[in-house]
Amino acid sequence: MIVEIDPGSSTPPYEQLRTQIAALIRSGDLAVGARLPSIRQLARDLGLASGTVARAYRELEAAGYLRGRAGQGTVVREIPEMTETERGARLAEAARAYATAVRELGADIEAAVRAVRHQLAD
Amino acid sequence: MSMSSLGQLAYTLAWMFAVPTLALLAAFAPVSRRRLTAFGLRRDITVTVGNGPILIGYLARVARWRALGGAAGWIAGGALALPGGCYFWGAAGYLTGALTAEVKTSVRPSPGLRRAALTVRRSRDYLSWGARWGPVLIVTALACQMAIYVRWPNAGLPDVRPARAAADLAAITVLVIVMGLSRRLITQRPRPVLAADLSAADDAIRAGSLQTISGASLALMCLAATDAMWAALLDLDAPEPFNWISTWLSIAMYVFALYSWFGVRGRVRRPRRRAAA
Image (cartoon, each protein chain N blue to C red):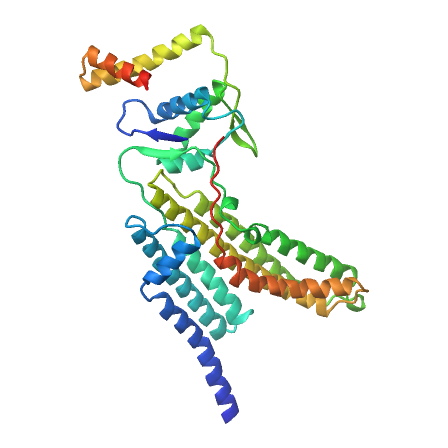
């Protein structure tokens, strides 16, 4: 399981990390009970500040994906049930971030939608 | 000065300088292809165009720092007649050199996307059984010996000087801390996602460094423990089988010191790859 951070992206690194880990948990690649590396280890491996990784972990804990326990590290929890409202809010948030990136790149809407379709088809 | 004492002085000086000189000459020689191949074979890694220069750099750097530290410690221990002599201070210098060499050791990632694996890295995945459990065995043996000594000191008047016991205990504590911190430093060193040959080289470097530092630390811990244990044994008035146990614990500590230096330090354990799930 590999996560990657694009330093040139308009999406903040903690958000890139959060979405990738959440996707790995939702897809089942990260099983329930799997241990994640410590904040310090992951931060060093990715060349990020510890606070950045800590924020991603904190948000995943708040969303119910992870559980941090003293002496046990951070482990994956059962996939949290998400209400329609929550899902809609998350989707809107992600779409807003993507729209910002599209505007920044000066791409037209057709190309942007095509890129999304291509990614979703992967 | 008589001829015999002159001869003794010459012998001492030769011993004091011959060992470090030979060690330095061996360490500062260029890394041969044979040595590189042997390193790769023992760790089951293929030396490639990509990882070859990294491994050569690593082998040269660590050998030089370790030899420099060992030589300095050996000479200082002999010249200043420090307690423990050449052996203890030579090993202590070697450990210091080994730690110094680790500070700048890392496999650098290529620029661009930053990638990392979601796997937990632990020092015990890189270490052999002896290196992992050695400190526990040493402290347990020392505690047993001291418990026997406190219960049956010779003529009821303890002769083991508290300062000596405290110095040995302090040395063991410092070494445990040094070993723990160095394990953390080496295990937590950045490990970006690399090509397979570079990853294998990185694993081999980590495992080699951890094993060397653990072996040297354990050998020093054994020497410090032996000092206290032997003093207690010579001043012991315990009935059998405690006298027998105490004698064998002291001998076992000597044997473990030799095993740590000649066995644990160079032992190879292929890192266990752990999946996050």
